[in-house]
Image (cartoon, rainbow, N blue to C red; front, side, top):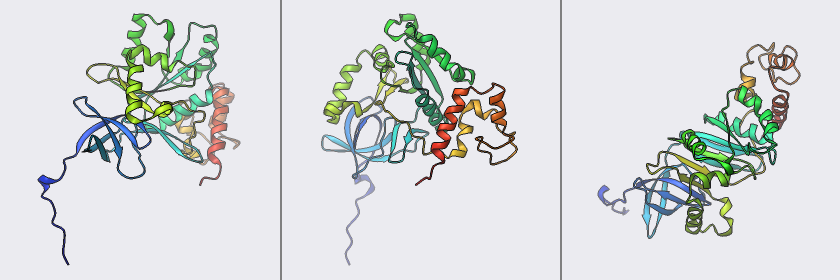
Length: 309
């Protein structure tokens, strides 16, 4: 029985490290520590790569092959009955951008914050278009979030002064921030304000990844400074934000305004829906939990309580 001779360790191809700065299907744009970018593809038919991943790769012709995804410190994703969709990895914070015109959907906001809490990612809310009449209604809608400790930054991105832009940049400084927001909230305006070359970068990355007319399906990272210490990550829009990765019993602890009232229920397995002696429902009756937030808890809890696959 013959055996194939093994190559000496020195002859084996050395793996290189890189950061995924754009992803589309099995292909990714990987940036080396010195700032060079190369189109890479995952080995195998499937890819778990997302923007923000640190990877180990090796050259293959004029491209690269990703051999390994390094351990992540966090991953923000959503999961429904049919599939799991990852946004980005190794994040320092999540910025949920909303506006009063059109009025944002509170369910999407709440779900994004629950997912971030579950992943251990700090979150803040950007209220855009504060120069428009609907800002007062949007501000009132966000009052429960500010009260429970989520930072709310007020913005008017289309009329921002240099000083206001600097304050916004200071909030993002030294952090890798994922921006989520519904259509019309101003995500593109935000990115173009802070990254003047964003449009050109989108074209270059889309061409490199061969994303074609499906460029909106590609997630991209934009550096905000020359030292590459701060970045914005832009992710495609979405209609639904499933939380099927979370058990129904874990929901209340992931909602800060409900969490502070836990521990006083008569029953240890209280679902906080109809059981007597529930400390959360008592807090609701005292006005310590906003009615809108309680409705969201009921909606999401019912969804998560359905038969899991």
